Image (cartoon, each protein chain N blue to C red):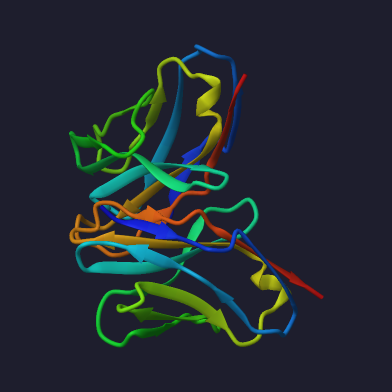
Length: 113
Length: 113
């Protein structure tokens, strides 16, 4: 079975500062990795995903994540955050046939002016 | 516009009164699923469906029922709701069993008193 650990439940940060949201997973098989974002009172939106190929993946709004197989991690980073990045971020893994996503407990990113 | 639509968005009900949360997708997706989101626990899968008339239990199916009579609809039924089913519920759909991306509805916030 797979499991996902998001080490920080809340991350406060000032605008224009860099941020890293940590995600570690455990699995006995190869996995596919995702970050979803949930803005207040909205559903989940796919932010970025790693399926294969380059271990560094990027989103259109400046986030990036790097798949590190040896450390079983998929940390999310952004070099300079904006107020509009305030949201809850979920790391998720899926194995094999994508039947099921295993989600972490979420990290609330609070960007302050 | 491609979307997953859930109704209602908010619902307060009393213990034991049967209710149905509807979910509809307009993307002709084969795979649909239901999750519940609870603070500190992330999202946990309740039920999923790989196609019409094909459903199976997820991680937390107790107290819930589903049906998949049409490809676009996947209602979640609570025959006798209890307070421990107070939660935020999300419906999701994917193109097929092997698709890496899931599309989520806006969520239904259910309170059982």
